[in-house]
Length: 213
Image: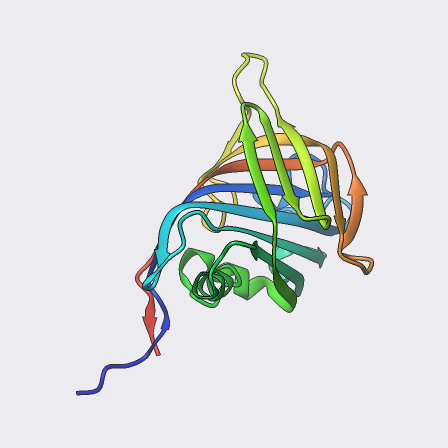
């Protein structure tokens, strides 16, 4: 009996996610609303603390997806550029690229559904940091953003639960605001420089049993 080829490998991934975009706080996608100005440019970062994609150990690999879309997120058609940790091996690079463009299915499959065009992908120095209420996302000289997580009147961190992005990012997001957010990838959609906009962070725990070909 022949064994069918696996086109979507099983995976289990845990770590921290970061989101910065040029919409106003809170990022409207989390509550199912269209972008603040009818269009959105954002950077989504995942710091993988532990996990495997198929047989590939990807612990310690960071990935940042820069995207642009006009209109409601659910309409798809996003333009996407993916950056992967410059220290990733070829095996890690390929596995992470497939997973974080939705090709490996599971919770991250939505990223593929929403994508219109994958403009490119490359290795880059990536730094994703969470320090107290501060967060920052840096990708070489292309992406730079930092922000502060907001506190409520009781002094506790402002959090959003059960949002629209809970599956593809994480079940709980801490709500923040950027001091600076800039992307310089060329073109009208993937170049932006703003401040006082949406910043979110949290943790993720993704798992998928994979699928045969």
